[in-house]
Length: 249
Ligand code: IMP
Image 1 (cartoon, rainbow, N blue to C red):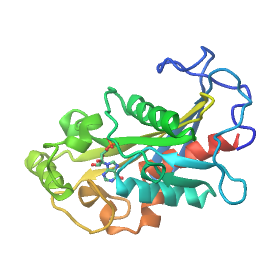
Image 2: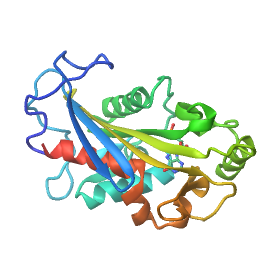
Image 3: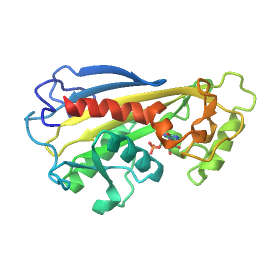
Image 4: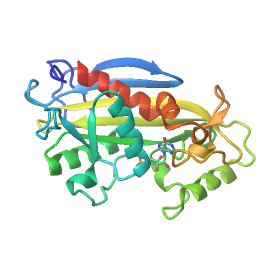
C-alpha cells in the first residue's frame, strides 16, 4: 500500500483528476475481465486513511448496505490481506442516492460520501446486469429492475418472464469498484463476468440475480457454486483483485 499514488496517473470524467493521462492496467481472471486505473488529486505521496487495525494496518470502509456485497467484498479483500468494515460499523446508515448515469459515477458518489463522513478510505462497488437482448438493460438500474419493492426472487422471475420468447440469452455482470482516500486520491477498477440468462432459477447461494445467471463453462448458475468459487469467477472478484493490484503499486 505504501507506494500507492507514486506520481502516475490521473483521470478525467469525474472532475476529480488533475488532468494527467490515466494509467490503465488490463488483467483477466477466470471468465471475468478487469480493468483498472489510478488517479490522484493534489499531493501524490500522502498516506491512506487514518484508522488502523490491530497491527498498524489501514482499515477500509465499504460504502454499501447490501449484505450480499459486503460478504463478498470482505471475503475477496480479506484474501488479499485487506481489512474492510461495513459502513454501518462507523454509524453511516442513511441511503446514498445513486444519481450517476454510469457504474463508475455511482461508485464514486458512494465512496466519496462515505470517505468524507468517516474520514477513512472508502471502497464502493456499483454493479449490474447487462443483457444483450434487452439492449444492455437493466444496466445501472439493475437494483430496481421490475420495481423497487420486489424481492430478489421476484426480480429474477420478472427477468425470466421478460425473456420468455428470447433465444439469444447472452449477458454479463459488470462491476466498477473505486477506493477514495481522505487525501483525495482515487483508484478505479472494473470487472466483468460473462454468462447467459437461464430459463428458471437454480441454486440457493449468492444474492440478486445469481440464481438466473448461468455460466456455460461450468454448467451452473452463480447461485449453485460456493462463495469461494464465485469470487474466482465474478465481476466483483475481478474488479477487486485489479483494485488490490493498484493499491500495491
Ligand atoms: P447496486 O450496485 O447497489 O446499484 O446494485 C446492483 C444490483 O445488481 C444488485 O442489487 C443485484 O440485483 C445485481 N447484482 C450485482 N452484482 C450481483 C451479483 O454478484 N450477483 C447477483 N446480482 C448482482
